[in-house]
Length: 285
Ligand SMILES: [Zn+2]
Image (cartoon, rainbow, N blue to C red; front, top):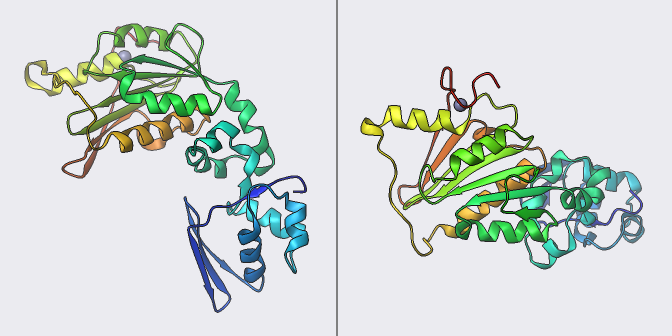
């Protein structure tokens, strides 16, 4: 623990009767036992710069084990996990949520890991441009060429079945990349499916089902102009999904599913993506 700068961002905590409820940006934990006050003192002192050994020095009754237990319980993380440019531009929160699944002793290697990753963005770049800025701040390479070997391909559609989809599908099938399809709609967004290299379906399967389920193969044809009121929520959601996918934490709810969010109705619907029997594009892959 010695050199780990502990960072902690509490949104609140309280204690009574030897029990403390600690609210971090991503979780709420209840702590019990004689040590609760010492742990709260440590959390208060953790500023993201002071290394753990010095924190222990400054808090009465604290030992190295206390700091290790903060990491183990996801109440603190190694501040070096967040690339400097992300911290400067205040978007480190998009990584914080993913840290609990990464061993604390490797948190400090995250900036190097991110710098080795790449994303290709195909289609309508404008709605996802804040996502691209955050990826760049994290050190991730961003390209518009899906033919380059990349880790993640983001297909940002302006219209359902934008002309680029079939070329992107071919490139995804030929690669080891994960494909994320997303689209801003007139009332919210349609996000997913997220197709890992092992996914048993492809976009041709998805679109064929859309055609079969809608009389006459009706497509979504509305075109969006300007920024709808939910654009920030949209770009935040896409950012979370892209970072999670890059760090091999593909959100299960998007695993071969499409999530349809309606801002005005306040509803979320998910529909499962089924493989098309004998799909001419992905069958036999
Ligand atoms: Zn298919």
